[in-house]
Length: 162
Image (cartoon, rainbow, N blue to C red; front, side):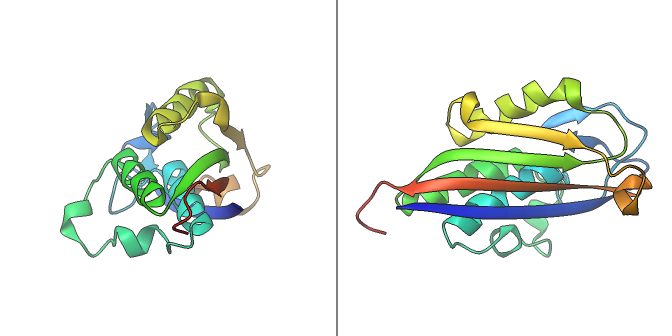
């Protein structure tokens, strides 16, 4: 049986924070505000995978009220999510994501983002897609106030335990 999940995340851009997307430290004058490293792309991927497996969301598993996740590397969180879905008898078929940001331009960083996500999930890079778009200067992302990301994933049941 195949299952699909959708994930969405958004964080505000602020000064004196690193901008990390897909596990890549991107040179920019602002970074994303959050309890962890605020990697909206990886957070959306986590939620897509958790949703497909009906395991809740990233906030359930890694609450921002828990000090152990303060400044956490989101790729470490993703690795935990992948272990959870495998324990439930699923394997990842694909991940497709879109980052929405007016600035900075991130196209040149996408190959490394794909590689980071694939390696963390233990899947071939050709099962991971990352796209980037702007919102033509409309809304909070268009005004440069924040960055958001959407992700969808398909997983399949490889165990009779599910």
